[in-house]
Image 1: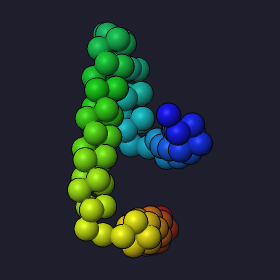
Image 2: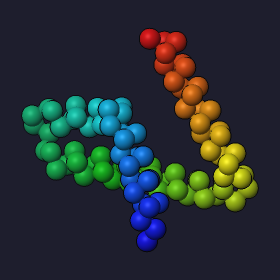
Image 3: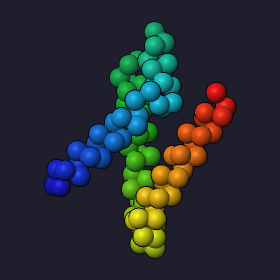
Image 4: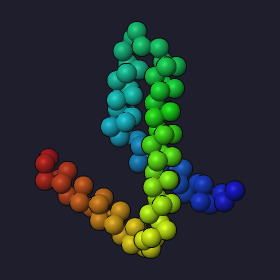
Length: 90
């Protein structure tokens, strides 16, 4: 296993998910007293695994046709655009 890559991906995704809508919605489901916590955890974990698998599959497919540098630039521009949009709406 490529440990530097593993730690980079883990840290990036972990930090990106903190305070994210996904985490907030999971906290709301868990906060409701009659919702079984194991069910909330399992459903949320499986949803994240499924979306991550989709991201890996799509990323691998797109990566065959588009240079990784351009994908990085596109992702960066997307994050900047979302940040600017968030600032404009605030």
